[in-house]
Image 1 (cartoon, rainbow over the protein chains, first blue to last red):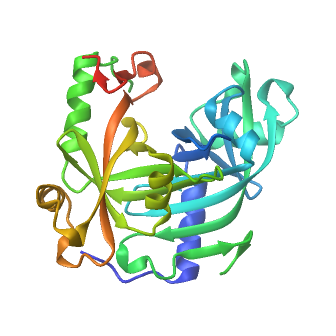
Image 2 (tube, each protein chain N blue to C red):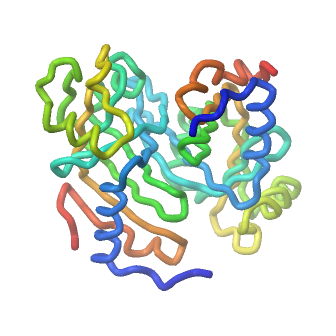
Length: 153
Length: 153
């Protein structure tokens, strides 16, 4: 059964709920300089208006985002989607201890505290530039919620 | 509760079940020539050892895959993942009617029959080169199921 399309403010509220949900994963798409797409699911936190990921410093995702400064994030399930085009806002070594606030937020929202065994893990901070959200095809119109880093609602 | 890691043959069987599932969506990651990652959820069918997508001929996904010949596909949910690195095997206009068998398979497996209103839709055929599958972190070892287009199990 297809529901009525949601309003913009409703979609924004639902999007923030999804970003704040505990133990969620996000599909992280990045591209290499050579133009090869990479895609991997990662745990995430939403902190200070940034999507925070934790990954190995030499992983394909971190190398790509370091090179391009960009990532495209897909939050599912696929029929309740949020898509974020994001810009790299910083990469901080977990072992540096310089990102205590980020580390705390990350450990609170996920089921994993990287600082317990930091190795060569880094936190990747991604700032949303463009946000889209839709459920079924009747919501494709009006899917744009943020443009150039500014919420439209 | 974390289960025991599955064997390779078990993971292959589960992967084929996922590929054959009715009304599933796949996260399709592609990259532009300029190295920008794109990501979008699409319906899919599994036909003749190919992942079949349907999309607008001038969509970012079709433009990217036409340019690079590659896509990376993520089948969820994120804690029961299949990742496929795929090569473009063909793009056929839905209106051409040249791909009747593909169209039938696609309509059977999805809840959408593009040939009813073909417009500028195309079928995109993607051949798996590399397949990985895992659930929790205890399955990261042994996640490789196909290499260079050949199943390992």
